[in-house]
Image: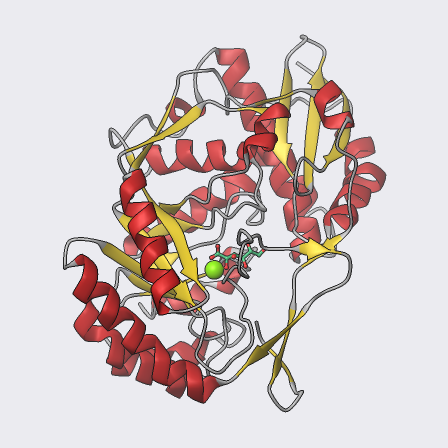
Amino acid sequence: MKITDAKVIVCSPGRNFVTLKIYTDQGIYGLGDATLNGRELAVAKYLEEYCIPALKGRNPLNIEDIWHYFYRGVYWKRGAVTMTALSAIDMALWDIKGKMLNTPLYNLLGGKSRNKVLVYAHSNGIDLDHALESVAQELDKGFKAIRVQSGIPGLDHTYGVAQKGEKYEPATKGLPREDFWDTHKYLNWAPKLFSKVREHFGEDLLLLHDVHHRLTPIEAARLGKELEPFHLFWMEDAVTGELQEGFRVVRQHTTTPLAIGEVFNSVYDYTTLISEQLIDFVRMPIVHGGGITHLQKVAAFASIYHVQTGFHGATDLSPINMAAALHFDFAINNFGIQEYMPHEEIVNEVFKINYRFEEGYMYIDDTPGIGVDLDEKAAQKFPYIPASLPVNRKTDGTLFYW
Ligand code: GCO
Ligand code: MG
């Protein structure tokens, strides 16, 4: 079997997606997600100029070798752009293998370890009442686990919280919008928010919260400690992960479980965090973490240290990534939870999906390979629209993490 050609499809049904399609001499093609929110065209160009020419003529079944060709074989390793491109190649190759063997991806990963995949929803509101209302809506839809975010009293707007009458979407058209941040106000507010959520909805609901890298280790330690009475499933990205050792301080002070990794792209971003048991959940998604081939290694490494997976699954990851993640979630033993932020209806005009949500869990059908298809004609109707993630500033104007 040989790769004959490949192409990159960029489309924007409501938001931007980049897809890699790899063709073979046996009429089978594979699809991989290559979407890197706000940097889409950098990945598209990297694939088109440097990867596709080198893919042609290779045997698509030799996934491990092709993976290392684009990792070790490239002097400039790691980094979000190159790892997203490599993820797309890897996903497309696993898709081809599944189609060729006429079996769904999870079978190639060891078969099913569970009957259904627990997912968590997003709920958010500009203030407490709207946040509580949003939690009630997600509960009505059947979700058993909910990530709760809310506007912070006294702050204009915060990332992760939809403005009035809008839906939360992790990018806005054009150049970055500017958000505002005040750690003192946030730290005073977050425990009150969760106390109210528990008061209204009881103990059964699994609760998650995303700090979005905005605290120092000692601030995160305080928050984790003050959230302990509300028994969170996890506190996410409490501190930026650039300094892995920084998590020692957080860990020493709190039993609130910690999740991190949606911006990571290599197992080497995790070695201290995992081996010192400083975290509980790894979040690096298949689309940014070097694909299935690399995530298998991360998950296996994590399993030795009692660390579970909780992959990123926001709307800026395409349905191809979502399906690949679900196959993976079904297959591995140390699965924890999967983020599920449903795409807008319009996305289904381009992507034909094979998964469904029911009563808090996801299910996937037995279509061979990853199982998601892309309608190229429909994709052409939605050309790329430049969009950006926001920038965050402290109230005095200092540029800050978001
Ligand atoms: C999450 C994330 C998203 C990201 C977004 C970036 O936990 O779902 O933090 O909201 O910010 O996916 O592109
Ligand atoms: Mg997050």
